[in-house]
Amino acid sequence: MANVAVIGAQWGDEGKGKIVDLFSRDADIVVRFQGGNNAGHTLVVDGRKTVLHLIPSGALHPNKLCIIGNGVVVDPEVLLEEIRGLKERGYLKDDSLLRISEQAHLIMPYHKSVDQARERLRGKGKIGTTGRGIGPTYEDKVARIGIRFVDLLDAKTFKEKLKHNIEEKNIYLKAILKEKTLDFRSIYETYCGYREKLERYVADTALLLHLEIKAGKKVLFEGAQGSLLDVDHGTYPFVTSSNTVIGGVCTGAGIGPRSIQQIIGISKAYTTRVGSGPFPTELTGAEGERLRHDGDEFGATTGRPRRCGWFDAVGVRYAARINGMTGLALTKLDVLTGFKTIKICTAYRHDGKHYREFPASLRVLEGAEPVWEELEGWDTAISAARKLSDLPARARGYVRRLEEILETDLVLVSVGPSRDQTIMLRNPYR
Image (tube, rainbow, N blue to C red; front, side, top):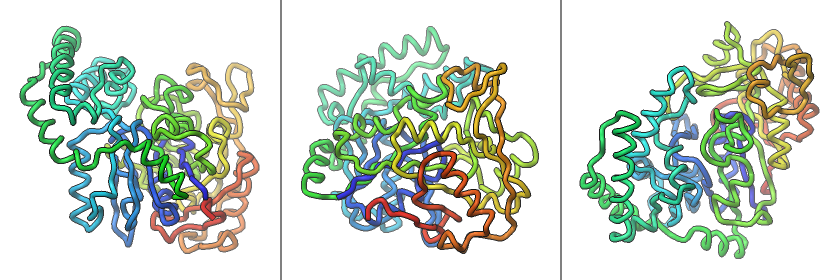
């Protein structure tokens, strides 16, 4: 038996959707354990693109149990739309194949209002939030005033909690944020409608996972965002509001660490970032534009253009260390085809100091100058490669050099968006 966790090793958007989709073939259960609909996982199956925001990527395989864990914050409207879209295409025919934790927190309209108003008031200091209410929902969770699915299912509890929260949030919206207040009755009735449509999916998913793992079922834990966006270990405050690293699997799914045997990091063959925050290897000229164009680097959730740069080995090596990664999946190697030279950042310089390890200081990161290692590029198209030996020598050299610098073995190399455009070096389930 092997249970596998898939963790982003950069600032998100690493291609986790495709990798989870591939590994789902050998899993029985796929679990999303943190984040909300601020994340989008893009999958290409038989030439058709699917973007999932809340439902685990295993939904595109038959007979896979998909679980939304307690660590996820859920917008019911988005979830219902996603369910409807999948059902229309012949997926999720059996409602028993989707389960939502009764302890997962609900995103409410006031969370979105607060999120958007705060970002507007920050001006030049914007964090780059998607405005979907993710952060404020996690804030209420920690403040112990959040509303969970178990509360929604109890009409009396839900009404009492919602009434109290609306009264408090309206004062804040009006007096501090200068925003319109919200109507209790309309929100209450809308969410009661959500209850009727979603209660069939709600369960004690931590107990369900415990029993399934005990029975020998294979589980795949699917992360959202990336390690460098972790609220504790990322480039704070330019981070998301949840724990995206391996510890988030235990808290966000309700399982113990001994239930995870393989920890697979996902990294692009270059680096991207969406929104504000430090990005030492960012390319602002023609090379960055080329990476953005050739890599189709636009947010799956927001459509925002991603910032692009050369591979930051300092950040990925840090992610490998704090997650205890047992292997790394490298995506979008094909996007580097045609570059005369390719660079890898192996360290940073700042104020005369040399940093081989990822610094916590935002000031250091914002002023860091990359220490580059330069390799020759390749011109031969690689999307048809299915074995490492099919790659041009320089592409193989780049891959092997990354393994050396990161001190982590690769488990696969993706050479295109489709399922079959993959070089599988080691299947973590076998």
